[in-house]
Amino acid sequence: MDFFQLRAARALTGLSQPEVAEAAGVSVPTLKRAEAGGPIKVADETIQAIAAALEKAGVQFIPENGGGAGVRLTKRGKQAK
Image 1 (tube, rainbow, N blue to C red):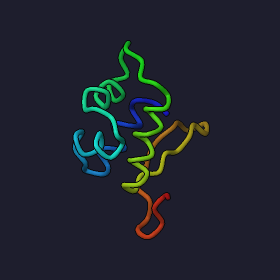
Image 2 (cartoon, rainbow, N blue to C red; image 1 turned 135 degrees about the vertical axis):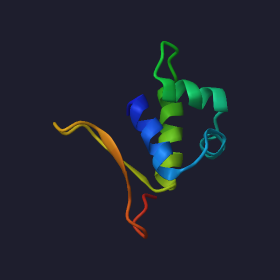
Image 3 (tube, rainbow, N blue to C red; image 1 turned 180 degrees about the vertical axis):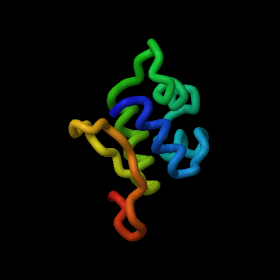
């Protein structure tokens, strides 16, 4: 999971940073650091919590498969659990 995927996923959902942070159980500054991908590392467990909140909102994370990693919205009724 890369920082650009987190930013893109949140943009697809239309959720604000405070909404995602609350759903993931993290602070807004932590979410901002995770989305920035800067020199301050965010714990893997925190990244996973953010990703899980975004998946619950209907995002599917696409792993690197030769064409690049990415995100997409799941079809209605087929959201990740």
